[in-house]
Every structure is written in C-alpha cells, then in structure tokens.
Length: 108
Image (cartoon, rainbow, N blue to C red; front, side, top):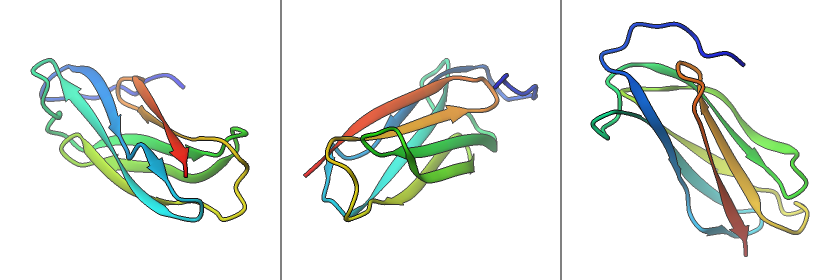
C-alpha cells in the first residue's frame, strides 16, 4: 500500500517494534510500535499504523489499523491455546511513510 501524503513536524526516518522474546500459549502480551524522526525520537503527530499478529503458519490472529499518538502505539495481543507449533510474528507498518518493522516471538 502506498504511503499517504501528510504534513508532519519532521521527516519520518525509521520505525521500530518492541515485544517480549517469548509468550505462553494462550497468553497475552503488549507490543509497542514507534515512528521515529531523524533525531531518533517519536514523531509528534497522530499517525495511522497497522499492527498485526501472525501465528506460525502466517495466519493473522490479531491486530488491525490503529493510531500512533505522538508517534507511539501500544497494543495488547492475545494468543490462543490451540495455535500451531512455532513462533508468532508481529508486523507493523506506518501508513504515512510506508516503513515497516517486524519481530518474531517464541512460543513457550
């Protein structure tokens, strides 16, 4: 999907996602997506972002479109007891720039 056009206080230089290294099957966790300017700090704007949780087969099991207030969006995700074996993957995309970040999360 192409980036949207918007007027921002600074150029978006990078994005990052943080989440735990591992989660229990059927457990919950929080992930935080940051949209960063050239100075390395979150961009001071309300930005459209997408955060998705995928199971080991690539099936989306949570997430959607959200708003990153002042460049930061934190979301809570729940896993299922019957999820397939393997790691989860959190994928995040900033709609304003098109930049994306992802992280694998081991299932314990």
